[in-house]
Image (cartoon, rainbow, N blue to C red):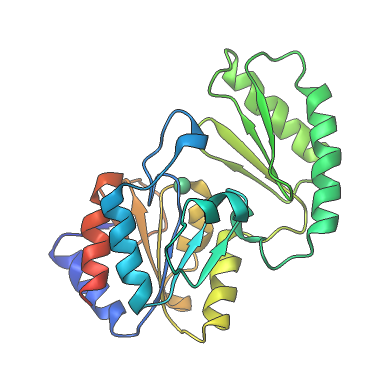
Length: 244
Ligand SMILES: [Mg+2]
């Protein structure tokens, strides 16, 4: 993994920019800093202005674990080509079967996790999140959710920072979403920036699919080719992407 803003990183990004790539970004922890209260997450004004400038010139997409409506509101006024929600499923999949699964899963989890304090279930329409930042017995929560996910035949169980996302069996992941987006925009290359476990689905596609992955935060074992040291470097990256 090379630092995206160092000589090797900027050279690699420069080479990618020649292909006019789709520029794809995760939201929380990538465009916006992680905050204690997820509802309060927002981009810095400088980031917002840089993304807006970029989106006017190049195809930009945001792929978030939030619902599409939720993340769309946080991008108000920025002309991105597409907002993709729920880890990749929105807007492409028929939401009805996914909603049915999610509704049943919430009822099941409410019972299954009832004895564990400090757990919050978030119905995201076509997927759900178990938040356990406030839980005392965090390890027990993780085990219980893993058991429940098996009972529910969940499609993917994605762990974030004090959150576990459960996706329906037929849900798309961020990598599948990015490939669809590239197809739709008729682009052979993409740069994908993300900070979390769900973003590895896009990173892992790698160069054979024309994707240059940039992880926010260095992590051994990540499939991203490049990294930013911290979220606050996003403005420098957006500036670099805009200069290509
Ligand atoms: Mg994130």
